[in-house]
Image (tube, rainbow, N blue to C red; front, side):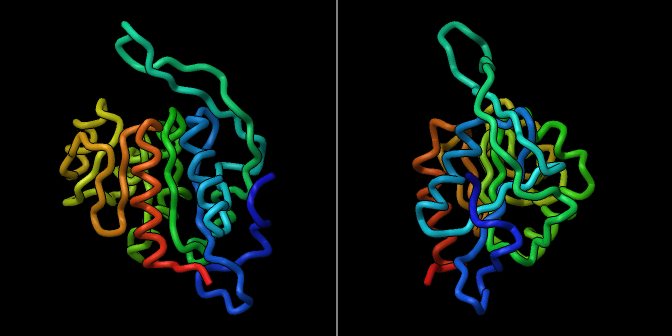
Length: 205
């Protein structure tokens, strides 16, 4: 049910005519909507999309909701979805852009040295990166936020400032090729802004 096989597609310049590929990095306890909304929206647009995780397996997502008189988000079981490839199998050069969903997954994924190498490759190449909610914990761990303007889940304001970023509590913040949003209620603005960047950097057809 995932995008075209990771073995079958190339990057934005694939001579065989394959559409540009976008990489989603995530893991267990990622927020269901924050993985599946960009995944399906990018497929709908015509891009190839692969999901990478610490290992190839069926991932178990969660649902984070915002309920009245509750001081933080609540968590419930979410969807399951297969990872297309492990972090150790990722060749960043084959991908035109990167998506970093939130949920609890970024809290432990940021400690993965293979993932940090992937993130650094995307930032070094100035490729489009979409991050949301707790996803910016990953870019912070990779040293990619110094001097950048970002938003994130509002509770991460101090973390973003500690990483050298300028935090804005806005629906979407675009800083060059880096597109940030706060949480899944911001999805329409997030994907609208990210697709504008992506279409310019990795056009279809």
